[in-house]
Image 1 (cartoon, rainbow, N blue to C red):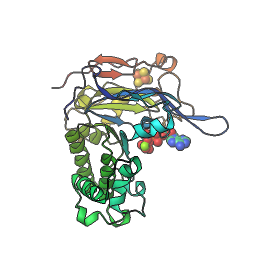
Image 2 (spheres, protein in one colour):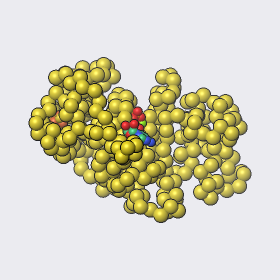
Image 3 (cartoon, rainbow, N blue to C red):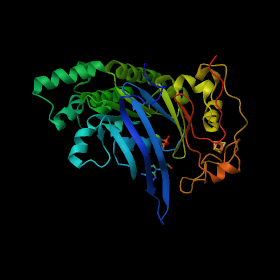
Image 4 (cartoon, rainbow, N blue to C red):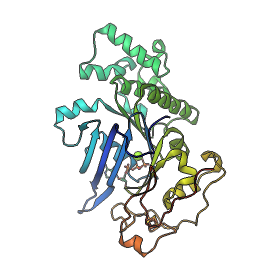
Length: 336
Ligand SMILES: Nc1ncnc2c1ncn2[C@@H]1O[C@H](COP(=O)(O)OP(=O)(O)OP(=O)(O)O)[C@@H](O)[C@H]1O
Ligand code: SF4
Ligand SMILES: [Mg+2]
């Protein structure tokens, strides 16, 4: 995809989040530190991938961005509209501009409704729909746009469709409201491998054709790398690294990112230059109830020093558009 990423802040960011904090109550006064001071910026027409292992807070960030629920603290701006703190009616209206596609398309759709009504739900709720003829014309067009044959599917219910077809209906529903930003949270992970590539291709062509911005959440490194302009890597509720996706295989500098890359076959990264760092400590993933002091990755990090326990690393720019939150990470060599 073509964007202005990598050369500093975009003059027209579509979505900005600053210092998001989300903690879930866990009984007996304890709290799950799910997201702890995460910030991100997505330029107009850009796709930002969010990568990290299970439980690192990816979905919590995605939900905070659409304010379902709002973060405990921090700010989210959609264009010039600050979503955090908006009055309910204003937030309801603004939400049409930022749509989410989730992992399980079948349960995202009301099983009792027909496809044409599911796709038309947005315009009917938001009062932007016209008469029956308008509905038929626009829902048929939306279905064709996502690669479905309207005559074959418009009167069916979700259980009569495949998982891939249901995800296409979810995309059609989201696009009906003409959003500026799509949040995709593991949109293909529940689908058969054979249809995953089709849905990824649909999302990629859709955002490119419409000039949408996208936040694409997944734990599959190669999928995120291929669809995103930039990648943000998270570990235990914190951002470790943000860099252009094309630089991921060769330039990733954070020890955790390099651990993720080292676990992949070279062919998935499209490189024979797979990282070969010191082995990671075998320690288990720490509990988000009581994250480690200083750098949260220190209990597994092969480069950890005393400073890493005492001092939280502040993200710093090691080359234009490439930020790393690590005391000891150095820029790696440029691409060949
Ligand atoms: N509603 C909730 N109540 C309590 N804890 C929660 C809740 N939702 C998420 N968590 C916890 O918050 C942390 C972050 O969860 P989140 O679902 O955001 O991670 P994730 O990166 O999306 O994981 P996955 O890759 O498995 O989807 C985890 O420790 C999770 O157990
Ligand atoms: S700050 Fe220290 S513990 Fe954290 S990633 Fe860097 S070297 Fe490892
Ligand atoms: Mg998740």
